[in-house]
Length: 95
Image (cartoon, rainbow, N blue to C red):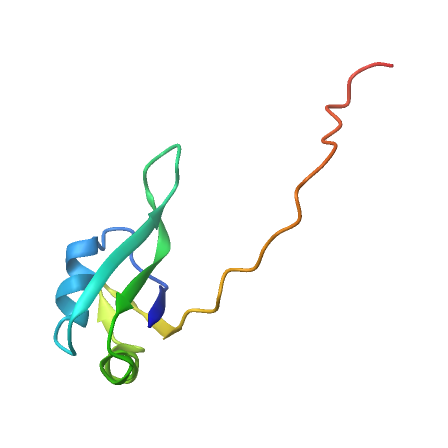
């Protein structure tokens, strides 16, 4: 199960999340999302756990708990929606 972890302190690392979630079972992967230009955390991430019952236990056990001074918001991640391709982009130049 893919788990969304929001409201993360910018100082929280993937290792911090792995440690917290591994108390509930086997963690397959951890990904803290960061800004591609600055490299700073965007304050959310995803944790993948193979066993759904372990993942549910982690969601129940960790939702609202604090890591790095902020209470995490945790729930099952929704499938990523396909976004339509952006077109145009106009630049505002002279005609």
